[in-house]
Image (cartoon, rainbow, N blue to C red; front, side, top):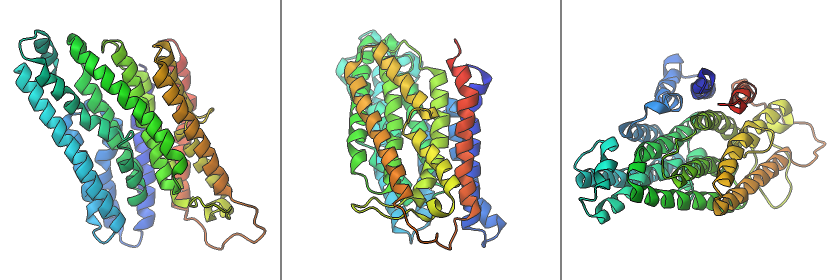
Length: 406
């Protein structure tokens, strides 16, 4: 992996943090510099998670979850934020507790807590299989929940709808990246235990299929733009499960494609930042055609720029997101994983269809009346341009290196 690709997640995290800083500054411009910068300091660990995912530890995931919940719970008079904080607490908190219990059972069965030693010890067959065969799925549960794939996709939709625009994309991206890192850390070296690799392979494949089909089935029924973006983000988690499924089908011995994962992480941070902010300006879907929102009537260029992030998050051909989807599809086809490939195709078509429908609804019907007098503040418009520019840079600078022979 070239240094440029390795730095792509850090580059994307810096852009996402800068966009969040613009939004925080606009929201709290009357409260003084110190008050405005306080949320930015709290967002820095989230950006660090996106930038330095290779240094991930299980304890760091718990800290990130606790930080997001604390930020949401701080605004106690906001019912949406309070509800979102409670859901994260009981969903992800319970998943972390169960996974830690699974880790403890694995350590008990193997007689060691070192992951690189556990699989080899268990392969000796000294301890009964039922103990570690129950512990292994439990240890993976937190990663599955944090990735946000169906049936756990509701939490990221709630996060994008119920949390501030400057928090939702960074928090969602950091939590999803923590889930991906959790699974890769837990599955490292499992090829030493063929029976364990078979269990993990079946579990990841089933989880990937459910995440693709569940997300694809949920998307058309969503009416609120924020929840649509959240469901599209959940499909990004399904892509990680699809990539992991192909690895596990090879017995766990095939390493995760580091280039693909770095581009996926960078793309998730950029696309979710732009699409998450854009959703705040989009109309709720109705049976009757409606007029365009203020952003699309007063600032058409900025609106189109924001739509680029949405289309990339959905994997529309010609965007960086389409490459992320295509690489997983190629790997599934090469491994002859037909059922997963069909499930992925259903989800991909649903994502593209919903993204195009959302774009059509955003421009609304022709309205001869003059645009509204109110304008969208320039920091919000700049926060739409920044991630879109990052996506263009990702396409033009990273793609030639990714497509080059490795």
